[in-house]
Amino acid sequence: DTGVSQDPRHKITKRGQNVTFRCDPISEHNRLYWYRQTLGQGPEFLTYFQNEAQLEKSRLLSDRFSAERPKGSFSTLEIQRTEQGDSAMYLCASSLKSGDLTGNTEAFFGQGTRLTVV
Amino acid sequence: GESVGLHLPTLSVQEGDNSIINCAYSNSASDYFIWYKQESGKGPQFIIDIRSNMDKRQGQRVTVLLNKTVKHLSLQIAATQPGDSAVYFCAENPLKNTGFQKLVFGTGTRLLVSP
Image 1 (cartoon, helix red, strand yellow):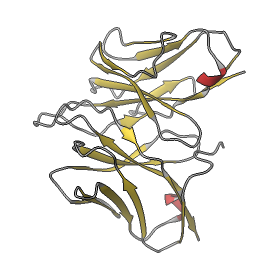
Image 2: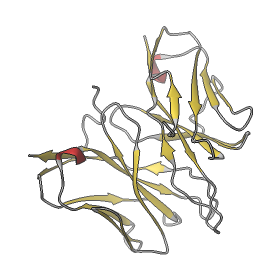
Image 3: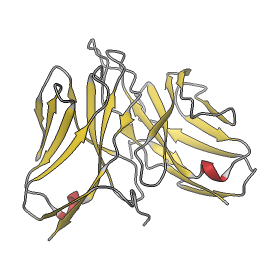
């Protein structure tokens, strides 16, 4: 499978525990994004990497959240001291910087990690 | 599987009909727009995109129309099939010419196709 891969697909954790999710983007894609989606809503942007540099973070990303992309390939998203409000689908997407002036190419999403905090 | 979007606007069509899903976007500075399809329990799947210097783009069975004057986007699906049943989201990139896709997603529309 050459698409965006996320692991695990589902995670149930107790409130207060730490969780970490992994995303493997499409191999030649240098841009990686994390989004969060709650039931009935569209995905909301969390953060963006170009190669290993984290260039943008949403205000949704509280200090309990940290994302890394140490070698510019896979990325991890860690949530510390989870709260019930963190329950959501966490989606990773990747895209490739195009050669034209706009630099926009489509972003491909993974299947997501469904987090349930109990 | 779990349901995506329990209280979304719903469009119900018969198999073989053409479907039109509409979306109003918010930022007049947005220069790139994408339609995604999301099936229950899965991530969004890219359908078609359009840049702001175009007003129409066609793919296989799908057409996207962009009206910048009224900030409106539509997705037309020809000869709708039961496999098209899903939630459809439009997304806009309000960051002009950066290539960085801080996508802002719309509410979503559930498409139900009856055989």
